[in-house]
Length: 431
Image (tube, rainbow, N blue to C red):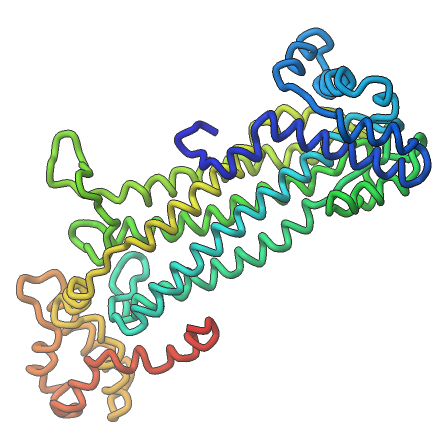
C-alpha cells in the first residue's frame, strides 16, 4: 500500500525485514523443537540461537541468482550460522516457512485491527450516549419517514461494530495456524511432534490437514472479513456524507484551522475523510474475488496464490487499519447540529407525523381507508409547497376537527412516543 495510507504500526508488520524475521522465528522454533526431541545437540542449538540472522539486501542479491526467495534466505542465514546451519530446515519445505511465517503476520495484523476497532467502538458509544435524546428525522428511500434520535442511529453503528469485533476475534483464531509437515504435507521427513512443538512456541495451532500449503480458504476468510468490516465503515461514512449535504447539514466533519476545501471556492467544507473511507472500502472489496480465486490451487500445491498475496494481504491489512483510525477520528470530531435536525424534521408543518394522525382518526371511529385519504390529502397539500403546513391543514379540516380536539391533535405531533421504547435498545447495548 502507498505510504499515504500506511500507519507505521501496521506498515512495520509487512516490511521485508518483518517477513524475513517471521521466517527466522519459524526456523528457530523448529530447531528448538528438534533439539527438545534430541535431534539437535544443545551446543549446535546454542550456536543457531546466537548466530542466526539475516540481511535483507544480501537475500535479494542471492535471490537474483537462485530465483527462489526461501533458498536465498536460508543461504544468507547459513552464511552467519556456520556448521550448525546443517540442522536448519531439515525435513521442511518452503511453504512450512512461508505459510507459518505468514500466519504470524496475519495474527499480528488482526491484533492491531482489534485495537483500532475497540477505539472506534468507544468513540461511537460515547457519541451515542450524548445524543440518546437528540431528535432527528429518520429516512427511508432518502425521504423523510418518522422521528428517531441521533443516538438511535449511532446505536445501529455500535451494534454493527460489536459484531465486527466478534468477527475479528474469530478471525484471529482461524488465521493463527501453522504447518511443519514437509513436502506434500505427509510428515514423511519430519516428526509430527516437531510441528506441534514449533506451533506451541509460536502460539499457533497446527493445521488440521495441510497439503504442501495451508489451504487458502483461511486467507480468503481473512480478506472477506476485512472487506466486511470495511463495508461497515463505508456505511457509516456514507451516512455522514449524506447528512453533511448543504441542504441537510445535520452533522459535519471537523474542519481544521487553516484547512481549505477547494482551490476555487473558498466557502467549501467537504466530507473528505468520509469520502476517503468510502473509496478505500472499494479497494478492500476488490480483493475479495482474488482471495476466493486463490482457494482453487492445483493438486497439493501451486504458487498462483503467491503473487496475489504479496500485494493483497499487506494492502488489505494496511488499508483497513488506516480506515479504522480515520473513522475513529471522524466520529470523535463530528459536529452535530440538533437545531438543523429539528428544522428538517418539521418542514412542511410536520408531515412526518402523518401516521400518528392516521391512527388517532382510526382510534376515534373513522374507517382506515377514509382516514388514510384525509391524512394524505392534507399532507400532500403541504408537501413541496411554499409555506406548506400539514398541521394547519389538519386544524382547518372539519373531517379531522370533529374527531380530534386541539389536545389530541397536539399529541400526534409529539416525539415522545417515538422515543418511549428506545430503552430496549439502550439496555441491549449497555448505553
